[in-house]
Image: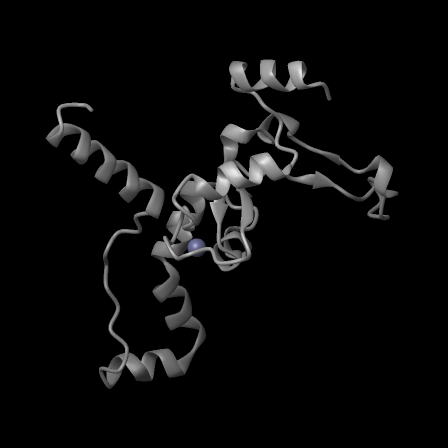
Length: 158
Ligand SMILES: [Zn+2]
């Protein structure tokens, strides 16, 4: 792709995500090297998460693996820079194919899910070793946006 074509894509806000060095550096800088979801420092490993999941077609209709050159995205319109978030590996892998609000609901229900699955969890709760909170799941990028808005209010929009 030419530099001009890349520039036009960027100006139009539909720049395709290719995982180039420039794109990855910009993504990492988005929240000062922190995961957009949990807020932990990314360290050396950063996963690039599609907020709206991008699924790939990797098998034919009979479930046989497609050759690499025939694999494609089901929703290539979601494979754009504006749909990317910097994520730590555990958040990216846990979010998997969930949409953001589906993942939030899943996280919100995590204690209920584990409680049903393990007697150890139930025992831990009974003996006061495990305490579950009903605190809402707020992603780091949402906290960061709220903080930025507060700072802008204090400085008169500077
Ligand atoms: Zn994370």
